[in-house]
Image: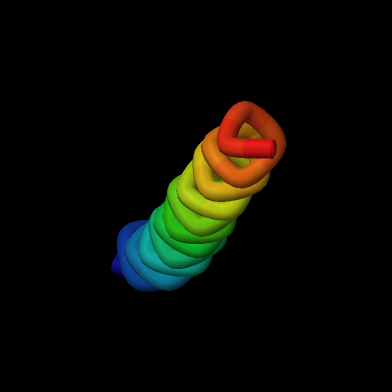
Length: 42
């Protein structure tokens, strides 16, 4: 039972880390797209 609880918390922590990385990648893609569009307009 203790192993299950530890695994649950570790899995949840890893899931949160992955979601944060996905969110950061999405923001970076949006900024990179805006930068490329600004560069092409000049």
